[in-house]
View 1 (cartoon, helix red, strand yellow):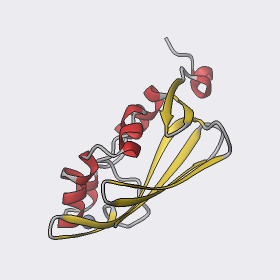
View 2 (tube, rainbow, N blue to C red; view 1 turned 180 degrees about the horizontal axis):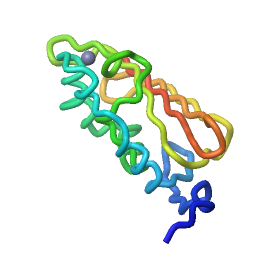
View 3 (cartoon, helix red, strand yellow; view 1 turned 135 degrees about the vertical axis):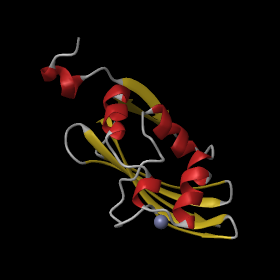
View 4 (cartoon, rainbow, N blue to C red; view 1 turned 90 degrees about the horizontal axis):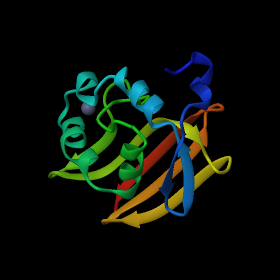
Length: 143
Ligand SMILES: [Zn+2]
């Protein structure tokens, strides 16, 4: 049984993203996402639907990292009043701006990446919101 005091020091798994080893509390992260709205609950527009049904399920390296970490990419944490901030044309994503959170510890204060993958440019920024919460900002643009 987990004691409440151990919450911030829960069991951490080491999950790699690129060359970095990141400590993740997968169970706490899953638990956090259980209480968030789905993108489709917040917005039913066709751009959000494409992101929810198709794009968020593609095997991009950052998505694979986040899924392993307990993140649910079909849930909505964005600042936009509705849905995920993205644009789709002819069933192809033009850009998207997303935010996710997981519980864990970065090997350094922040991590920043800028790389191309599958004809998209990814700008990915990890930073600590506090001791145990890490925000991941992902900006994707079609090349
Ligand atoms: Zn929408």
